[in-house]
Length: 140
Image 1 (tube, one colour):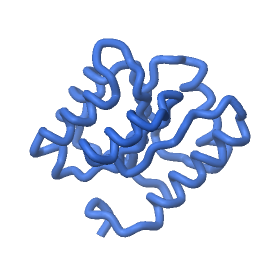
Image 2 (cartoon, one colour):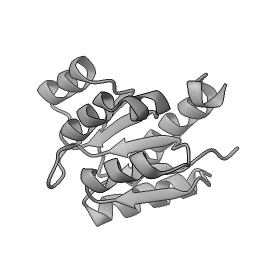
Image 3 (tube, one colour):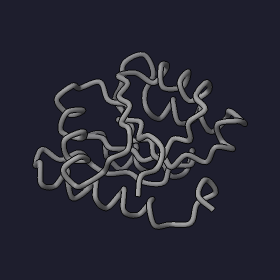
Image 4 (cartoon, one colour):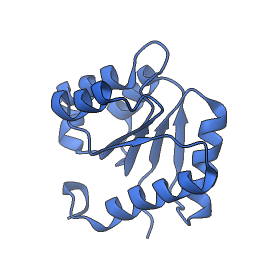
């Protein structure tokens, strides 16, 4: 079953390519939108009519970090109302950053990036399977 687009916010093109290929290889047919900075992602989310299925966001990004971006999304009434699942996928998975993500904003997951392609596929399968099967305000 195909849902709305998956938004990947990632400034490393190699990482973006690995994520894209992993998603396709596990059978995800959703449109994939890749943006390399959070400011463009925020503008897109405010203006799109499409219900985004999932946001995969790095933490360390230029101009605005992923955590700053998520806080902006949380503070925006219309974007909060969209209830878009938000998962960090980042090498910055230290205790401080993970704790901040779960205590100061509404994230639905935090995964440490892997350099192993099979592990990336496994992560993407876990994340997408979960959101395809759980009850969610956007799919009731």
